[in-house]
Image 1: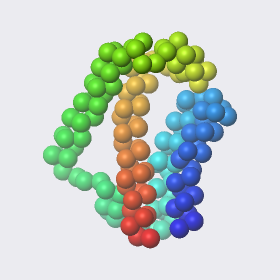
Image 2 (image 1 turned 180 degrees about the vertical axis):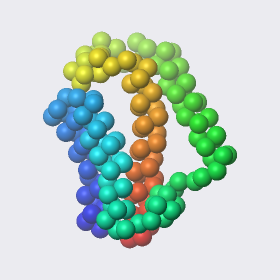
Image 3 (image 1 turned 30 degrees about the horizontal axis):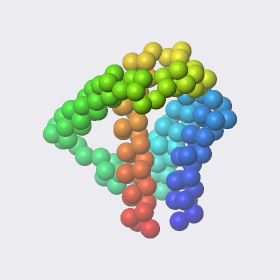
Image 4 (image 1 turned 135 degrees about the horizontal axis):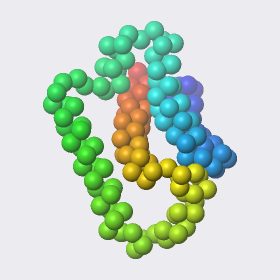
Amino acid sequence: MTGLILAMCLAPAAITVGLVLCRSAVLTFLFFYVGVCLLLPVLDAFIHNTSTAAFFKNYGFRTGRSSVVSLLLYGGFVFAAVFLLFSLLQGKIWDSTEISLVLSEWGINRMNPVVFVSVMVLANAFLEEFFWRGYIIHKLSVF
């Protein structure tokens, strides 16, 4: 149980260290998405000698053409919705100058906005779902 609580605490800690202490979106991505969401479950499976088939089954991966197509369609929909939402609400809900300043402090202004949004939509969708709904839910179910 202690390991599970620690795993759940690592996620906000990685984001805090990346954004607040390091003030870097790239480091935040590496700490949270790569370190916590991807490497932690993979290392846990390696330590517990989990087979590849069991790894994918335990963490909710489905194989088959229909699941891949539906996920790609859903990802495309979310990607388009994010762009549409930002286009329609720009300047109405938030102060874009303040947001630009904070994002600049985090180093995002040096990134291509399409690349940044693509990473957030695609990597965020996959890796967070993998960590929270795959790894953590599986760990809770075997506890």
